[in-house]
Image (cartoon, rainbow, N blue to C red; front, side, top):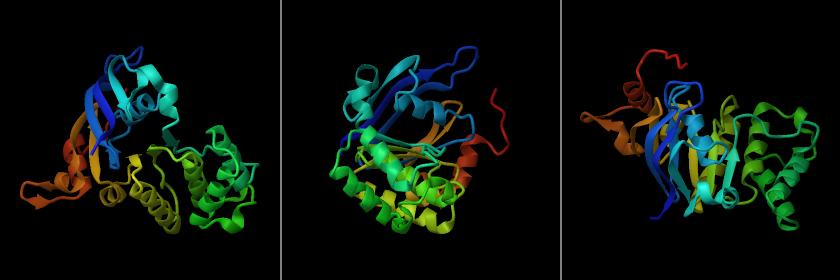
Length: 250
């Protein structure tokens, strides 16, 4: 199995702070894996994803995605990745179909391929009868489904997800996870960041728990869950590696 993402000796320190947001971090994500990137608020997840997607540059180290180094070919990498943010990256006054046609064209997908992908995606998400409705009439779960489609219309090789099912109803969550499993089934690598540990435990093939900018524990999910001769929940493992008290990050 080839590597999809390689992170080597990565460090990041924001100006005006006296600690590293990312501290000499090393991580390899194999092609076709679903990696759960987990950690408390302020632990370094957002900083790490921002580096991987080219939004910020690290102070030290390097990142290689699908064989390309971010410091040398970030534009080429952006064509290979899809980013699905927690915030809705949609235009409320446009319809679902109009939003998807717009974002697909921004990624360089042209008709008739784009139109077909939009129609197929909307159908898979169970929203065909709402395709010509404006986004500001959609429920949160419906917006989440369209938000996901907008980030993957160009068929990226690696997808970055930030809380893709937060605050949605059970039906929408199921549809989203099933769709992501379909993408993963054809070899798409997924980096999934969430606070929903039970969902991560069942969805992710591999997990990495980060705290204070350092990977505390990492490995295949089922191996991580086996500790001291018994199977633990991901929540137990999480608390053991990040502490049980609420934290303050300055």
